[in-house]
Length: 435
Image (tube, rainbow, N blue to C red; front, side, top):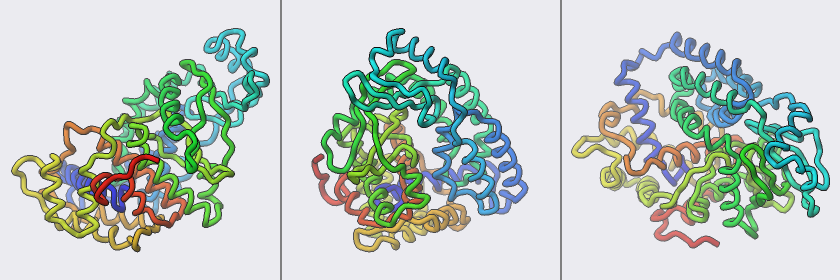
């Protein structure tokens, strides 16, 4: 877990560096005034109010960062995201049929025993229909909106223009980087064949797993994808009113899926949002929406385990040595470990044996510590950097940060440290082989 024991030092180093850079740019203590926050909030809410359905996915991603919003803006921020994620009006059946004609051929009806014209859900750039494949399998058919590409590109350009305001309002969450990643991945998001290829890899890796279920892909075209139907309770509903046992189980399964897939699949599901995960009747975690995935040919970097072990043992000299050896510190540059220790120690103190309890209050305290001037070091801001030869660190940080956010929304508690021991190399000595 990113803020518990898998990559705490990495997160802290990057957070300190990001915050310190803003200080170096002129936002020194006392400069980040209420007026600046008000102006940033005004820009953010104005843009969120203008976004079309194409930005639903970004709204979903930002929703897990709501704990980072200053309290006086929390309610309007949450309201804006709810509006952003509300399902768009369904496209007319004639448009759906026209898209199916173009993507699956004019004889597409012969491939289905039954096709429901009324969509059952809205995806970020399309809508989902329930159907029965010609061989009797229940399937989900995702059909892209005809103008999704134009809408998504326009929305993302608008967000890019005000990414600085998002960064100010969502201090410590690196919203600017999140927006840049969405821009870079636009092409992948718009071609369902890419998503289908990733989903096939995950489905193969987790086939028959007693803990996870990935629907198999039945057919795919650039703008239409057909997969096995999946029944389950979305984590968004469990967050709202789920039983304690379901909350804990969902959080543990979610964490294990994220921690295990870099090794088992060589890939990371990079869209951590409650709507993409369902707790099935058989208690397995069902996972959908593979439009955003990151290749992880080296699995979770071994330095992560070494940093996590140093953090858990309170070995800050060892942590500094790992940071230097792995290229997180510019050669010869001094670094200031006490601010990092003040960030990490309160997190480690919450660990009870193998157990950890994720709460919204925990995340809010984390944000408060990240903004405490005592924990901001200009020395570290000048010295620290992400390793140039391992760009996946940034995605690991964002995805696991999102997983932590969902676990906090679930109020999940359980033996999360055991998952870190199992899946993070060089944390507990050796990594277990995939089951």
